[in-house]
Image 1 (cartoon, rainbow, N blue to C red):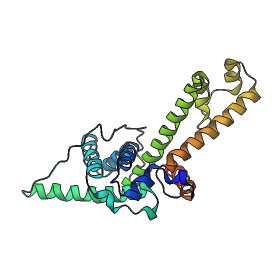
Image 2: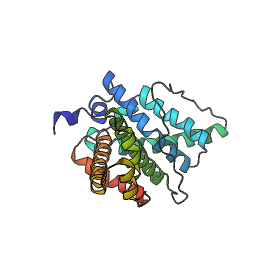
Image 3: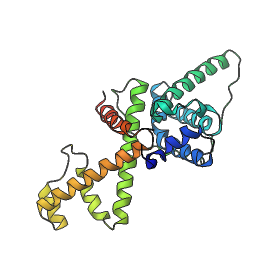
Image 4: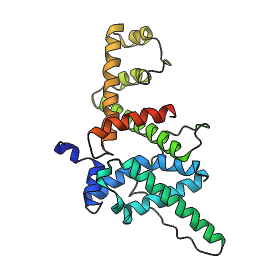
Length: 239
């Protein structure tokens, strides 16, 4: 394994169990990236939007200020796998507490510091066919990874002075056929169709690299990146 791969967010967290300042910062960044998938899971698990968001805050607060992260096994590889297992345990515990409260018990509420864990909602796409909380979590994770990668690519293009080109080429990234005619865009950009096709090919490659880089921050082994890419595609297809 290369030393550069060791310096990903999840390896920093799992190596130190989150006790070092840089590991805490890495964990906060992971919380931001996984906020939307956690909310999606909690909603499919029976909570309304407000309750799901409140519980997501509580869940991440426990990760950020508690010792829950000590249960992470760096040999198991994926932050997504660890987080989903922890989330299931948290959700079940919260349900038990709610039932106990109805019988006269109390429920402690943890308030999360929004500055410690930014809560960007990511892409929010409802899908009535997604019934299982696990599937909702995986699908929203995939959409969030794509959104973050697209934002990275947008920033790169903007920094290179190619904002206009990015806006014109962005519709071709999905490859789903819902794009303007090549000839029309080539004419607008003042290039040949062949030159435009090459530019689209290069941007799709840069986008895929950005997706893989985003995923690499959540695993401990380089070989896991391709496996997570396959999981991402499966989640988007609803399998």
